[in-house]
Picture 1 (tube, rainbow, N blue to C red):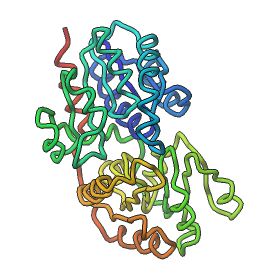
Picture 2: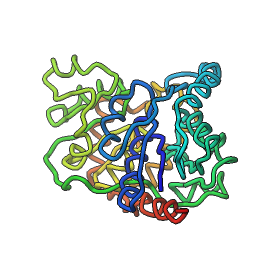
Picture 3: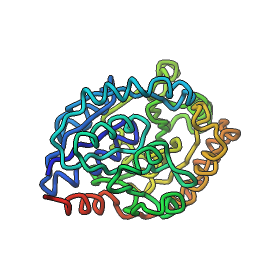
Length: 325
């Protein structure tokens, strides 16, 4: 079986990697489509398969929908030109980027699987709205997603293999994904736990934090190992929160990032609260992102018990490989 996985960056690439590992173990040949210019995704996926196409990401979380609509036709045309034929199945990892590439793969003969994003609890993602009519399977990560995707199959959160030994090295890891969360970093850096902090800042410049004597960096291929070694993980509304709590059993603080346009929709805040309850994390709302608020949330998280979850990537890989021709 030949599988084409659309690894759309950030947490979506995390979903893609989790599934790809299981497919490779099952004997499938796996190749990848990634966003243009996404070097982190390219480094991550290259250990499991070839990158056969780099396609446009037509909408970022910090942008309004109108900007993406204007770019979509061009993204679709470029995806049609770049995504190759010859795959039994293509997997869209749930982001806007995966829409154009998913359509292109389907038009070229691949059976399409669309993964619903881990953040969705109330309403479907644009990827599921756009791709479900042409998908052989919509894979859901939570039971709550059945409400808006009744034809989907719940496989569970796509956690992937446990690559690192779980331990407690005493630090508090603050990570906000690819885009970063300046207000959260500033509050944590001014808090009473600053001496225990490790900051992963994404697109936010880590320089001021480094000059202030903190351990800070933009990106690291060892981020998952840092999660495994943390005392507490403070992170944004996304895959990392699920990975920290459910995969590595870490006390977790979930801090929704309203610096993203996407997160300013009140529905997203409801979903963030639902995720926090689902995974046993402490919710840190934007109006509580202060030095005292961060410190208080970390202390509360250390008393909470993270949720245990089965790895949905195992079930999803089993379903896909059962389609072998």
